Structure formats: C-alpha cells, structure tokens
Image (cartoon, rainbow, N blue to C red; front, top):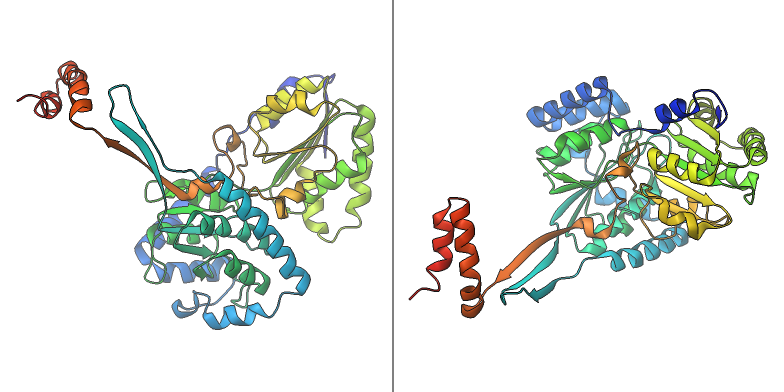
Length: 430
C-alpha cells in the first residue's frame, strides 16, 4: 500500500508518474496477442481449440465450442429464485436506461433548402466478450447483451471462457439467454476477440466487438480495429475515491475493497484532504480485508495496487483524478455540486455516501463496461447508441439544388475537381 502526502519531497513527480497513465499494453503483450490473432486468422477453429486448451485447460472440439440448446435448457433450472429476481431487476433497469440513450432519426432543411438528417440503425451482428476467470461476471452479460437487444441487434454473439471441464457457469448462461444472446461460445482471451473479428468455420465474424477483459483481451480489441469496430478499451477494474472529512472511513474502505477483490492489475485510490480520514481508511482496509473471501486477490491489490493520497485541497484532488482517468470515481464531499462538473475523464461518477460503486456494477442502469488504464481521457463508457450505425441522408429538390450549385461549382474550381462542379451545374442549367 502506497501512502503519499502533499508535503512530501517529490510529491508532484511521484503522483505524476503514478497517475498520468495511458492504456497501452507492454511490448510482450502486444507481441503475444499479435501472434494469437495471426494464428486464428490462418488456422481458424483449430487455433481456437489449441489456445483454449493452453490457456483455459479445457479440452473441446469444434462441435462443442458453441453452447448447445440442451446446455441452455439445463441452465434454466439452476438459478435460485433470488438470483432470478436480481437478474430481472438489473435487466429492467439496464433496458430502461438504454432506451433513453438510443439515438433517434431526424431531418431538417439547411440554408439552401436541402433536406439533411441522420438515420440510426442497429448493427446486424455484434460480438460480446464476457470475462470468466475467477468469477462468473453475470452482471456483465446484462450490461452488454441486454443493451444490444434494446438497440435492436438481431445477432448477439457472446464469447466467454470455459471452466476446466468445458462448461460455462449456469447462472451466467441463464443471464445471457435472458439478455438476448443468440449464440454463446466457450472461448476466452485474445483468441475469442480474434475469432469474433476474423471468423472461423464455427464462429462467423461480427461487425463490432464489445465487452471488458484482461490486458490480453483489451490489446486484442485494439489490434483488430479495422477488421471490425470496437466499443472502448475496458480492462482491469479501478476505483478512485475523493473524500473530505464528511466521509465515513468504513464505507470508503468497503468501496476500495469491492474493486480490490477483482485482483490482478486492479487499482484502488483514495484522495482525501483529511489526514484523519486517510488513517482511518488505512486501518479499516486491513480490518475488513480479513473478513472477505477472496483473500489472495485482495492481498495482492492492497500490496501493489492501492494508493492513499493526502491532498492539499479538493481542487488538487480533482486535478489528480482527471490525470488518472479512473473507471469509477466516488465523490464523497460536502459540496458535490461544486466539484462534479470539474471531473472530466471519469468512466462513471458515484455521488455521496449512499452510492457504492457496486450499485453501478450490478443494478442501477448505466452499463458497468467503462474505460480503464487512462482511456477515459478519450473514451466514454458503453451506451446503447454504440450498437447503432449512423448514416447521413441528403435530399435536394430543383429549387434547393439551384441555390446550392454555385457553391458546389466554386469548391470544384478551388480543389481542381471540375467533374464535381459539373455534376451540380448540369442539374440546373437548361
């Protein structure tokens, strides 16, 4: 656990080094992922099966890559009544939020009277990656596939890593089916992204790839841009809490630990103007961590991925937060309305003591698929409109074309493209 104070020597440099990040993979990761994509592109299903055996220890054949109707039927009877109710509640909230986010067609007349506008159509076929690993991310299925369904996507293809025995968690399968997934494949990692982008005999290629993942998945998404489009670059989990003396230390610590239990390269940060709160949170982290089940993951993040910073002022905290560009930002201060507009790079913002990040992770409505690793400076979180293609529409009549032609001809002359100008003038000259 790192503890930094604004009055320490080299504070500016240490925080700049820590917080000024970019979502770039290491050279080793880039090289490995490039090799995986190349193999899948050349060898198709066989490469996917070999890589699944290598990384997930699951022995599958091409016929068992896709989750069968029999597996889906068996999974329907597994979730408890409480689980079904939770899945239904989240799907309801996510769907309602997504409907509000969808773009709508529009038209207007420009100054010359030409009708111009936009139409928004759903992608026909999208790929959704749902991480597996040490925890079946049931909520991710709801916050990706369910949004695609609201947007009207007809083919929603999901890839998720299999267990060693070649199965997928039944609660996850149930949630995926309820979310509208039309195909589910037992494929994880960079090989899943490659299969979705390049296609294999079993997995047909998609138009766009969505979903979070580890550093290999994120790098694979970056490398397939061009073959397909992607949503954003969501990697290992992050939370940054900005708190003053009004915050409760035990509640702040619980938010930090909730993200720390993802393990791996997760980052948890507290920026506080109160030295008393900072010390109380440090104590609470150690106390609460002892009671939690994912000890290995939490210990690793507390040791190397946790930073507590005593700032000179909340204004300094905001500057640091904008440099860090965290996936989740919790703002627990007396005057939140003053500081909220100043946060410009956050994936999602949670206001006040009664808004734990887990509320957004599991239930509230906005997707929890958010930019990480500093990508929030350029990317926003997943929204329903990302499942829509935008197309511009232009329609001129005789009079509006007559008014427009002189300008088109002028640009044709300026740019040396006389055919462009003539294509306008020919329509108005008798």
